[in-house]
Image 1 (cartoon, one colour):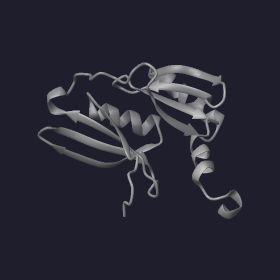
Image 2: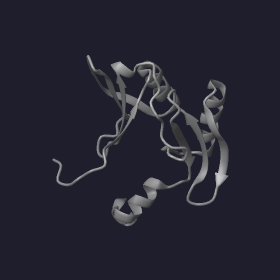
Image 3: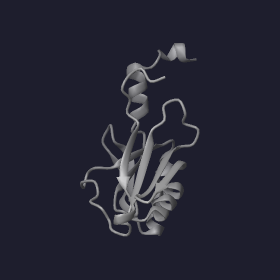
Image 4: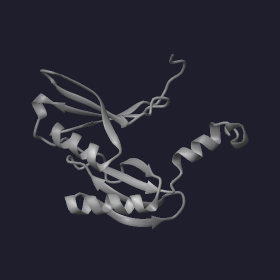
Length: 152
């Protein structure tokens, strides 16, 4: 039961839903968890498989009247971040993106807290950052999670 406000999703327009679904389900760890459609268009929700306790959803919306027409993308620095468990995972994603022609930032080490990153662009030009050792979840868990000794 919801007892307080909660951060749940980010929504982006899609000019080609099938291309967007293919991109996000092959280039990222996201899977389709819900789809909806009517005469106005299609909506797809993507999230990490099995992430039921604290789910976060990427909502893609393809409006029938805008199909085939790119909408404005997020500003140049704006991006969606995905943290990966190993440095080699960043290189692997970069290699696949390079082959697909959608690599936006080559893999690089950046000062703390950024870590080792690369970025790719989705079919509409939005930037998806892949990082290793950025420690976003770890930082939040250290702030509000149980003490390490209690978690074991």
